[in-house]
Length: 388
Image (cartoon, rainbow, N blue to C red; front, side):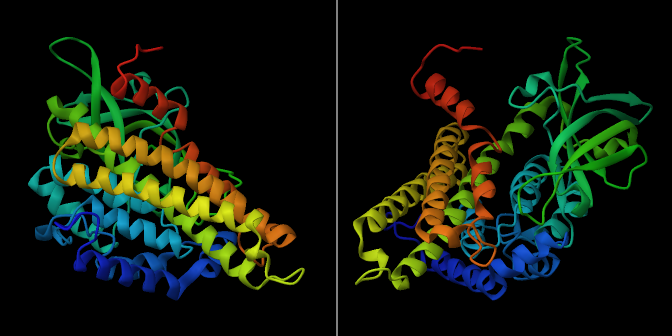
């Protein structure tokens, strides 16, 4: 944030204005039409990349904007508020771009970051497994050496946008030569690598970005597929989780804002008795409450992004989890209220509100469930004993 407190700097206000203009030039009708046709939002993604929005957080020397998570979350918020949730922004520039820029070799940075920044390369992120969701210690995808190469084997589930991705950053485990224990390791795997296959998971979410199960059957990758140092793997992994939560919060806030905008436009003109229904407190008060909750969630998201950009990883973790929780709750309530305000129209395709019901519900589940956030806050913020 700027030196004047909670007032955004002129540069950030200009960025917000420019992103909002891009989103409105495409809009929710474009987004939903693409999703229902089984197509991608390639035109929007490409234009956002060329305008510097996708890589705004990445280093300037690799084609990025040289800013931080604050600016990238701002982009995410405004895109979603304009009806265009680009979920791959969560994984490609926020998680993967951050991890590679912090821990990657010079060659890896040169190979991947410019494309991630301008949108010409999209990279997915694969951590979740059928038996390892919130408990990442149960990951069974393994990496073993074979000469100078690595051989990867395992399975992943609920991996976003693999069909759009040029490569996937896969979280596996390798044997620690000193202790014999398995420790996390991250590998960049191009999606056309032999033995790397995926199948689509049928979801009830209306989105152009799909979910997949990955099958990694003795996939051979070169030595330089390993990101960074073997000894820093756990730090590398967690470096991507705060940005993931901040971006999840940003998307949820934007979806909630979009829903409230639809509802307020409708209730200003919908007249049943003598005045528009927006004059009735049974309508106006819940919408006002939704607006307050979204603004409060955004403040916590901005705090998290500011702490993260300042290098305070521990402080950012607490704030990012709180922001994700608050945004998920506020967004879900806002969408529910928007549907209620529109009545029967809220369930039609024409008004575009019903499609947000399942999308907003996702914000309570991913990238981390609200229950796991409450566990985290109870243990770290309140010092309560662990239950697991």
